[in-house]
Amino acid sequence: MVMRTRQSQRRRQVLSRERIVETAIELLDAGGEGALTVRALTERLSTGAGAIYHHVGNMNELGQAATETVIADALPWPVASGGGAGESGGAEEAGETGGAGETGKAGGSGRAGKAGESGKAEGSGRAGKAGESGKAGKAGESGKAGEVGGSGGPRERPEDRIRAVALGLYDAATEHSWLASRLAAQLIREPWGAVTPRIFESMGRPLRDLGVPRGDWFTTTSTLVHYVLGATSQNAQTADDVPGDAPPDTEEVRAAFLDTASRAWRDLDPEEYPFLHDIADQMRAHEDRAQFLAGVDLILAGVTASRPR
Image (cartoon, rainbow, N blue to C red; front, side, top):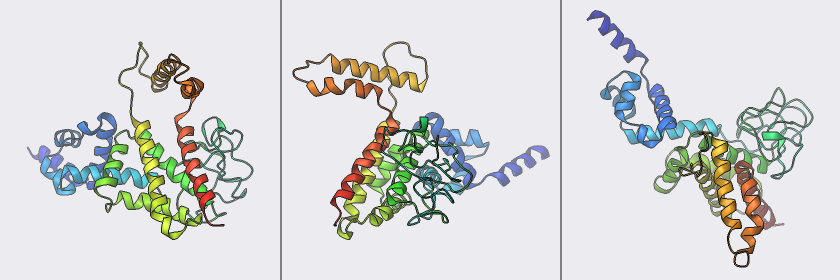
């Protein structure tokens, strides 16, 4: 009896809000929204419901805390106007983001893709594609090219900061399939909460630095935020019904799904759907992350073209 009492005391001592939120994220990642229950938490943490509610209040608050924690990791804070893109090698070398589909230069800035020393940072994105950034592709020693904030080193272009924020959200939603729907819900139902202001501030400051007229700040930022969240939500979805006996591998399932869709488009009447016939193979071969960034670039091109001269 004494031993059990001591064990219970040790469990109470290590239980904290941070640990509860971390466990909630693990449950959400493993099983989606339905997996986050009081029963699952109490079993995983070896504690009672009362102890959990003492730290988080209720399950809705816990879900919000999990969302805020993931976004805090995806979007470093505070946001800086012209954050560092590396300490040497020049701003164009160490954080350069080219158009989607180009090769040879390091693309964009990933959450952990470092671009420091000198020269062009190769291998920062998948297969060295410009406009992308790998989560852990190292290309130097100092200066993170994916941080929204930060100081020191050459000033990062506003366009690169926007791409870094967009890719941070995209990668977070890809890693946490439950996140996109939560972000959309908070944007619509609770824009005054912790998450939406952080996203708007991260997107809005570099848009402002691009020279967007003050009267267009909200509309322009909202357009970009809605595109980013909408695209991440779409890409976070999984295809439940894939024809054939594809093994449970994400890339193979995706390839089978796109092949089926491409063949279906090609089977349509070419006189009625000539455009779909022309792009069917492009749709099958497209890469989600590159397509996502291409959409960001299209919006930025429009912003740049429309700003006052």
